Image (cartoon, rainbow, N blue to C red):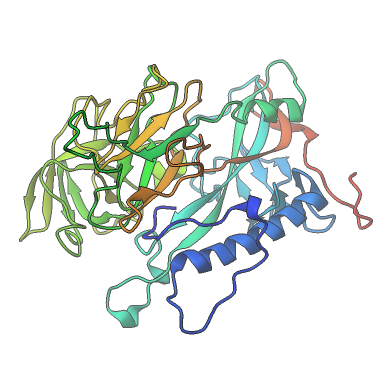
Length: 434
C-alpha cells in the first residue's frame, strides 16, 4: 500500500486482539490501521479454517466456469468464493475475454486468445490493490475543496489460464503458480568505522535524515539477481504521485506539481508512468527521468529511451494515469532501476542518510514485492526486526497473490470451449466438502 502512512505495526506473532484508545493521547494512523489488520486477520483465519485454502457456500458459490456461444471464450459465473479466507465477489456473469457485445471480467484483459486444440487450467488470482482518490475520485470529500483523507484497499480478482497439455490435476497445476522461494532482505543504519585517532571518538551509527520517513524498497523488474531483476526506492512509501491531465509524446501536463518542494518534482528525478491497465497487469511501468519542468503550464518533459513507447492520454482518459516519483539517483541502473546485488554476503546497498539494504542470495524476485523501512530521528535508527547490529532477513510485505484452481477446460479444433472438470470446493449445509 503506497499511502502516506507512519508505518505498518501489525505483527501476527504478537497475537494482539484489539487496539485500545486512551484519553488525551496523540492519535496515529498506524494504531487504527493495526486495529483493522487485527480484525481482518481474525476473520480471514476463521474463514480459511472453515473453507480451507479455497471454497464456496452451497448456495451462491460463484466462479463456475461454463462454455457459451462465443467461440474460444467461456463464462465466469456470478456469486462469491473464498480464497485463503478472502471474500471474492463476482457481481454479474461475465466472460473471460469478452467482446463488443459481451461483458468481460472487470479487472483483467487477457492479452492472448485461447488456442484451438489446447487444454487449460482456469484459476483465480486474488490480491489487494491500494486505491487513492487518483484512482477513484468518489472517496474524496468534495467539501474539503481538494485535500484527500483516507485511502482504500480493494480486493482484485483475475481469472487466468495456464496451458495443461499433460492433463495434470487442478491442485498440482495451481501449486506451480505459487512462488517456491520468496526473496529476503535486511535493512540497517550504516555502522561507523572506529577511529584510529585516540583523540577523536567516532559517532555511533545513526540515521542522518532530518525527518521521520517510511522508506519503501520495491522490486521493479522481476527475475533473479544478475538476470535482469531490479529495484527502486522511495523515502515516502512511494506515495508522491502526480495525476496526468494530458500526455503528448514525452511531455506530460500534470494536475499539480506537488504540495511543496519536498513533495514536488525536480529535474533529474526518476518517475514511473503508471495507469490502471499497467497496475492490473502486475508489471512495472516505464521508468524515465525528468528532463525539464514548466511550473507555469504544469508540464514535465521526460527523457525518452529506446524501446519505450509512452501512451497518449487526455482529459477523457478513464485509465487514471499518473507519474509516481522514486528517489534513487545514482549508481548503475537497469532501465531506470537499480540491480539487487547478492554476490557478497557483506554487500550492503546505500539508499541515503545512512540507510542501507541487503538482499539475500537465492530469491525469486517478483515485480511489486516490497519492504518498508521506518526511520526515526529520535533514535537515529531504522525500525527493523532483530538487533541493530544483526538485523533479521525478512520476506516481502506484499503484494500477496492468492491462487485457487477453478476448472479444467479443453478447446476443440473449432474453438468451442468445454469444461472437463470443476476444481472448486463447494460446501454443503452440513459444512463438509462435496
